[in-house]
Amino acid sequence: MTLRILTYNIRGLPWVSCPIDDILSWIFKRKCDIVCLQEVFTRRLQLAIESQDEWNVFFSKGSTCAGQAAGFYSGAGLCTLVRRDAKILGESTFIPFTDAGGVDRFVSKGLLHVPLEINGRRIDILNTHFQSDLTQVSCFRINYPAVRFNQEKQADFICKQYAFPLLCGDLNQDSFHYFDKFDDTDEITFPETGEHLDHLLYSSDQRHMFMNKKTTYMHSITLSDHIPVLYEFELKPTHTLHDTRDMLYSS
Image (cartoon, rainbow, N blue to C red):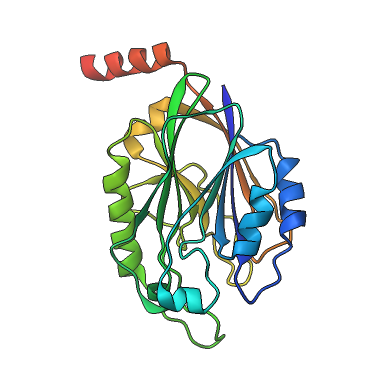
């Protein structure tokens, strides 16, 4: 079976006019199984997404008082869409990060976990948005690599509870300590700084569970300051997984 997972930071900040109707129309045409959106911060955006009936919709919950005062209805801004015929295995949960820096301390970033089953296979999707750097001033930048390291470590701890977890979203970096990337090509997903920030990640010991088929970077889509990325991969049959494990244990 082939899975199609899309990640897209839609730049839904309270002071930005996000073209959510155009974004949703474009997404629906992609025929994805799972869509991970970031920066869905306002209630207007949530209502627009909830009004459609083609997806199971999950939002992160919670915000800080400072964030609410600034118009952040959702502090984490995470939204995961799952196709209707997928079996949802329980309630979604939001796990806030234990570390944050800079302006991210005024919101509440973390991990939005959705457990689901597609064609008999359990998949645990963790949508996320790691710590942002301060890049608004062209000649000045504040970096938070230590915070992102701690956030990645926390994500790894959560992922170890599941057989096939996938970490997806705006990771705000291009190298990782605990995860491997589905696609390691030198692409730009944030044109403003020329960086590759948006990824689909897996634990290195799960490489035998899938076969990567295609990754598409939608450079022509300019509805946000990020580039949407579509990942297509094939889940290996269960009997193949058992055969692979047997070979590993016998060697």
